[in-house]
Length: 236
Image 1 (cartoon, helix red, strand yellow):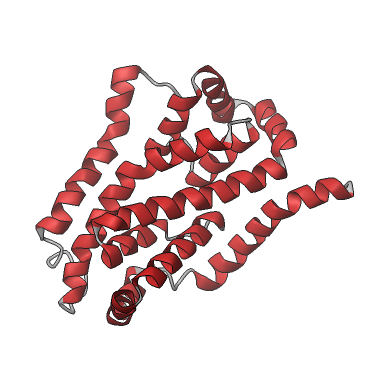
Image 2 (cartoon, helix red, strand yellow):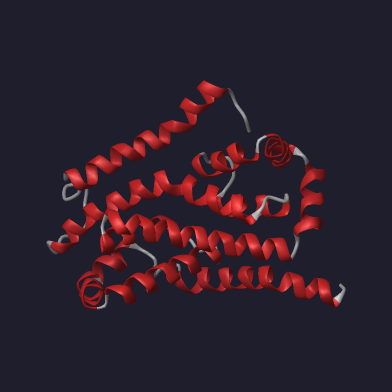
């Protein structure tokens, strides 16, 4: 492999290596149980050092997305628990968007052209996604975030190898994940009330307006794919 090509691929290879190591060694640490266990200490740090708490949270979220670690939903809930619906949703969207941009940039620097050719050759859903991107880039980028068309990691990679601009990718990512982030952040804000009382998050303790209303929103989001397909026909 030519040296300059290897150097271009190093960022993506490093992300993949770190993703594997962190997923293996840290997967049990990312849980609501861990958050509940350390709730008092974490909220005390937040109250005394808000800027540091917000910055560290966003950096941790960026790393989780960039390294494709499991537990993104728990991280989003944590944003709601620690910072409320607002500014929690801002921190969640910022972390997810920046992490996605790191994957996008690493893929653009590394495997872009060769990977795109292999994907085209295989056809199937990837080929349909590319064709749809060529036809209406903005709409498909938003749909890839709103609907489970492809996994989140692939939704970061595919636009990179298919020539989408970083600006369009960043804007569509931030706006496309906003509805889901708002719902999960709202659930997290409701969980904060439960944890503040020293209770474990059980089904009984979650029957509060602060949790139930966002759950209704989550049900609406789950039904959104069916509504959109009935309205527009199956796009992808």
